[in-house]
Amino acid sequence: MPRAFVTGITGQDGQHLAEFLHGRGYDVYGMVKGQNNPKATLLQEEMPFVELVPGDLADLPSLVAALQIAQPDEVYNLGAISFVALSFSQAELTANITGLGVLRMLEAIRMVGGSDNNPIRFYQASSSEMFGKVRETPQTERTPFHPRSPYGCAKVFGHDIVVNYRESYGLHASSGILFNHEGPRRGMEFVTRKVTNAAARIKLGLQHELVMGNLDSKRDWGYAGDYVKAMWMMLQQDEPDDYVVATGKTHSIEDLVERAFAEVGIDNWQDYVRQDPKFYRPAEVDLLIGDPTKAKEKLGWEPEVEFPELVKMMVDHDLKREARRANIEL
Ligand code: NAP
Image (cartoon, rainbow, N blue to C red; front, side):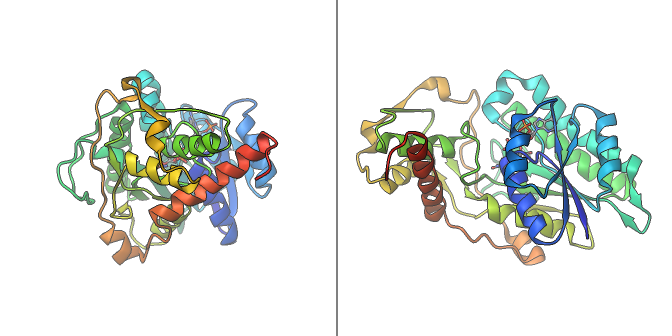
């Protein structure tokens, strides 16, 4: 059985990837941080097949020890401080985990290595936030980076160090430049989930207002379940490389709000939504739209879930969840 080691296993993508790899017959090892991580307990209940291994991206020896336990064929580095807003208030932490954490993981791989004829393959979770103040539209693998947040800057470092280790040491190390991808497992702090959950709660009478930042920003939103497949596909290639993973379509945050409220039967969404500059980013990323041609042509990857279906999936999930928690019959 092939063996995979996943950092960020308790996050949205980690859970989708664990399910995907398990379905393909992998032994899945997931790294968890902290001495009593509540998300690890939940994960173990939902996915008992995942073997949890302790470790932290801030701590190189723990990464080496984790790899020695897992003895993986493939490493997926999804762990990060991943919330852009938090990266502004905790920039040093973000640089350390999201940026330097990649370097530590690569060093750990060099130390543990895997066997000579079966070296460890590495996937890095790069991000469309590296494009930031976009230099061209749509963005491709060749578009210059101009990050607009400490998160974006840390991801650029992570991305560049992967290229450097690939070229310097011949590692089979690939990066997926993933555009926003969402789903019912998205953290509540992220704008899509904040909106779908609020629409559900307002429908159920549990909440009366949704306070938002900039409604004009545009994002290229796909479904996380589709995107983890692209990660795996990259590591099945003979040669490592970098790939943009995106839908190629863009929607504004206002579109998202309108559609989420429409899903619960509310047409006058403006009556419930208030904008507050407190939620504006200090530096905004205006128009992210990716060109996934290379992923389509070289990997044979295609996104399957379209934006309307994605919003519906999330709203339906949140309606059921909130109703269950409040003992409301739907
Ligand atoms: P997420 O839900 O925020 O998950 C982040 C994961 O990182 C969590 O499992 C978290 O563990 C872990 N983590 C945080 N600090 C750590 C540390 N010091 N050591 C080890 N692990 C640590 O993120 P996601 O949406 O699944 O995204 C996965 C990756 O893709 C991230 O690197 C993200 O930046 C990147 N990405 C995401 C998107 C997107 O739209 N989702 C787009 C482009 C790139 P705890 O739960 O224990 O805190």
